[in-house]
Image (cartoon, rainbow, N blue to C red; front, side, top):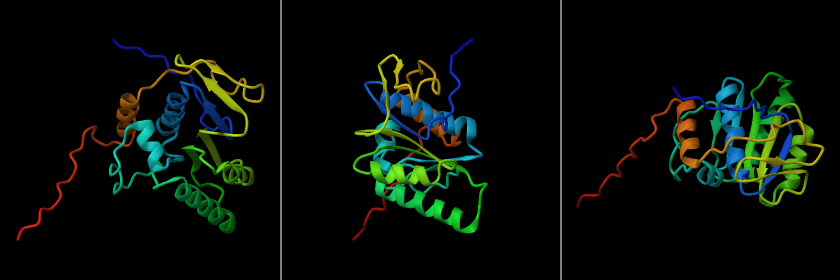
Length: 193
């Protein structure tokens, strides 16, 4: 019998969580999977394609044409933020208050100000788990999943998170999306003379 410990993780406990350190990518995987596995009916996770590739080992063309309700993989961070801005503007304009909670998992690149503004205007509807040069409060995570965080973040996350490899994360991601783990790619049509 196989037992594994998974601490309770609330992916929305911290509206903007910056992560650094050697275990940061594994922590983003854990938080993203927690959102998808525990809240699939009430959440939409948005991960730009480069981050989905780096974090989960998805290929460039994988999950492009699938309709997958709890996950959206736009081409880049700008497209992800444009989607989130549009979605939240529509909700505000229509007065919709019961939409899916939104979780952005991404390298913040040069878009920190845009992410801060987005979360500040919609604090109950969106959270962000961020890698890269995040200017706000950051938790540092080591290879063993041990978190060191400023006081503003302490108590909102477990002291230690399990490490999740890209391979395990990819398998869990495909499982929660109810997709086969190794789908063959469609063959390209060959040209005949």
